[in-house]
Amino acid sequence: IIDTLPGDATVDRVFNSQDLVQVLARGKYETGDSATWAEGDWNCDGRFDANDLITAMLKGRYRV
Image (cartoon, rainbow, N blue to C red; front, side, top):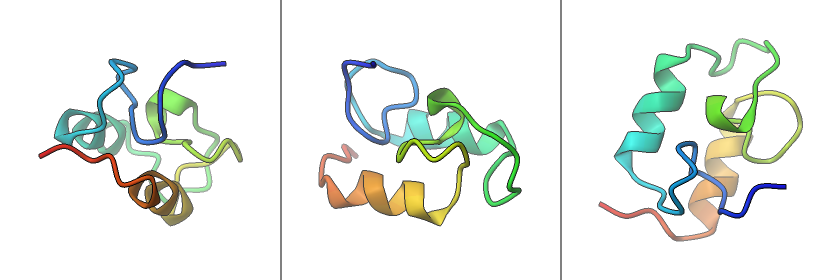
């Protein structure tokens, strides 16, 4: 269990552009390949896809 919120790939308890850059650089978005939290799997279904971004954005904690 990770003590953070959806979108926080760097696990620094902040969801910001650093997190998005990290997960997109890993190259697993919408590939169907298995992914970890640090690779964008924020809804814990084993993949990084649009549902993970929706989960993160619905929490409303993105910091510019």
